Amino acid sequence: MIPTLTFGRTGHVSTRTIFGAAALGRVTQDKADRTLDVLLRHGVNHIDTAASYGDAELRIGPWMAEYRDRFFLATKTGERRYGPARNQIRRSLERLRVDHVDLIQLHHLIDPAEWEIAMGPGGALEAVIEARQEGLARFIGVTGHGLSAPVMHRRSLERFDFDSVLLPYNYMITTMPHYRDDFEATLALCQERNVAVQAIKGVLRRPWGEDAEHARATWYEPLEEQAAIDAAVGWVLVRPGIFLLTPGDVELLPRVLDAASRFQAGPDEQEMRDLVAAQQMRSLFV
Image 1: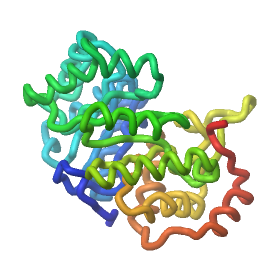
Image 2 (image 1 turned 90 degrees about the vertical axis):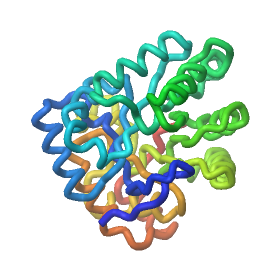
Image 3 (image 1 turned 135 degrees about the vertical axis):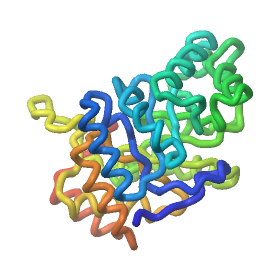
Image 4 (image 1 turned 180 degrees about the vertical axis):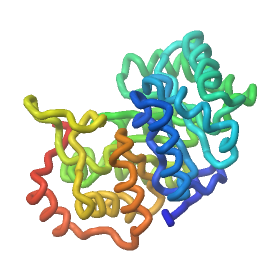
């Protein structure tokens, strides 16, 4: 079975691989239901989605009548002002067919100008706090993509006591000294405050080439071979306290969950260097 860990201060014991429901954004309900079978078979008990993930919330909604108690359910709002964020949160609840989510997150909050709006008077932060006060959400998080995510998350934690953060983490990005140092500083702060840390892009191979056929729903080219996925997943899970979100492609999901279920010890630095050479891996960010 996939290892579990208490998700920060929430008290929920989550599987350390969280289902990244962006994978459901463009699939039929039948395929989504088959994906649910995969999650149940591996014991995954935590789903992360967002209002902006296409039809993902709509695909999850039918599951909730029977399985709401089986999952810690998280969604996100990408709105920056109070009114639109308030409306989007309520629309997400309708699409998910639930009366509350466990975690509502401010989505991709790394642009400084957007950050000032969302975190200021009349901003989206007020809407998510209100949602928690009204019982529509239990906890509040913040997410970010890109190299500035660790720094912006520390800034966010200075402004508000978030329960979780989400940001990129994989071997290739740790070869970038500035990001690695920023990530470690953010991780240390989160561990000090018992804030859950979620990693995305864990099975990155490289950016899609200009002429490459995008054979996966992910916005980067993922690793495909099981041994390579095993190493990439192990690189993340060997770090205490970090949760790994699965990539946004339902066909890759079983391989990632299989890797997580067999995880015992992560690869060393030389093994990852060999993997980089063999797979011609490159960083997504420059």
